[in-house]
Length: 319
Image 1 (cartoon, rainbow, N blue to C red):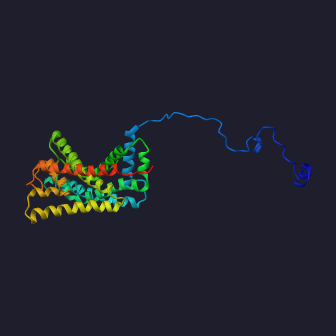
Image 2 (image 1 turned 90 degrees about the vertical axis):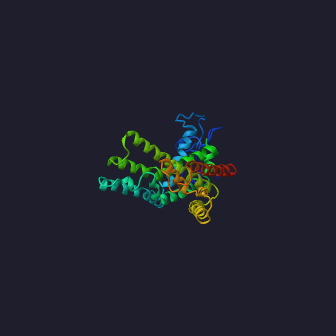
């Protein structure tokens, strides 16, 4: 059957043949049949801000803080952080309220001074320490984000620095914020430190105390989180160490009659004992020298950091 005859059968003329050496026309006469074509190739320089390694560390640290506090996540991820932070601030609010009600009759510092404040919130600090590091470290290994982070300018060392900053910043919510609130509240009620020099001295001691408590607990919790890929196991390990070490130390000293120096193995009480020494007080264990308390806290930090570095240096990461 001829082309004309085919056109009569279909009711439409046959399309004209394409020109020699060309592509068949596409819709609306566009050549190439409507398929995408690369018309120009080349590269353009990135013109945005280059934050470098420092910017990468800040970004990873901030995203880790957000994940820990449940920011940008479903409500169920915010419940535990909100409860822990709330427990840490309740005593501060009560003490400031007492300074308002009975500040003229009773010195609020006789009820709770800055050094002893941590004794009211040890449970909140422990629970928060057991939550933060496992959330910050374990999740990246389980969901593959660690390999993605290491494909950026970050290497294992700077990655761990970013995570350390995140843990310290998050713990500061319960180790720095509450006593700072007490200081500000006492100051407004004229029961705070005397003079500017006294106020700055107390502020400096509060900041140093916060780092003392956060440093030891951060090292312990990060070490536990680096040894397992289960958040629950890491959190339980931190809590068990914090609860078992005081019991063992007390049994050795009070039960077995050994030297008071055995109290130094108490990984949970020694950071808070150091806070008393920072404020010039003898604390709960006056038989221990200040230098020994400082040394054992440094030892816990170094030991925890060594475990983390060893674990991540041997970790095989598939990219």
